[in-house]
Length: 334
Image (cartoon, rainbow, N blue to C red; front, side, top):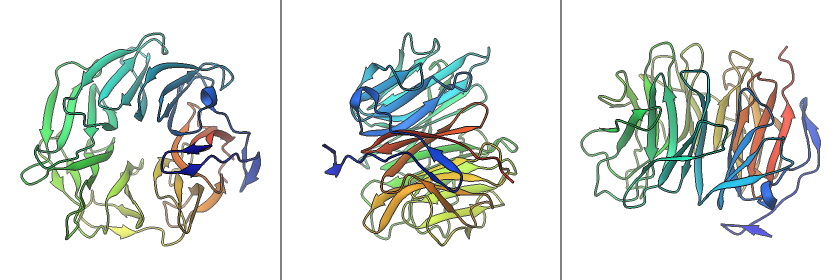
């Protein structure tokens, strides 16, 4: 059995690494080609899983599944609504869906003409931000914005000359309100200088702060202290204490390459996933020192494409491409 890109399906046995005890693999309706997962913060047993063939949903921790949406799933975002309800957004090819009733119904919020795929989602306050997968230089690149229900859409371009960008990641600094967008240029022109953007005013205007970053950023996150993290694909993790004015290289050793998540209980903690590719073994990693060093925490031999934690911050969930879903309790931080 293989997933696209001719990757053989792998089944990992339950194992424990550095305190993380991973259980057996869970495959939604037998699907192993999964890339993303979101967990309801009010219900540890309610998972939303994205795969290459659709969106899968379980309400009992992976025993029974349904498949409410078909198509290649990109990002999944679980957020709190203004009245305390759980909002679940899912990008499926070039369409964006929302459920407000725990998956009983899904509303189509928007479909983008020409087929650009939805690549990133962010809820900040009462606004929803959407990044797309650019595949030509014919149109300006930027970020789409609406209210939480998908109304009153507007487009915020990155600025002159910025076209053909894949917006892999969107993040917000909760203290300053600054927004960040990590991008890749789809055709890698030479010299290759992929931008990373910051906006101090909800997307108007954007400033390229990539500076010395050597490659494109596939994940961007902001810690509770305002520290900005940019995970580059293949060039390591970088950080900034001044909103991207200056950068420092965090971890020269093995660590995440494709996914990054703030640790739910450690102030300077990170969780991340590595791609299994060439000399990279794949697996999940943890840092408790702000990314200065990472330690493996399990799932060797698979690409950990997506990570999520539960509402109480006690369990981590991993979407491992060409394998399935794995979960583990998060050990107490010393």
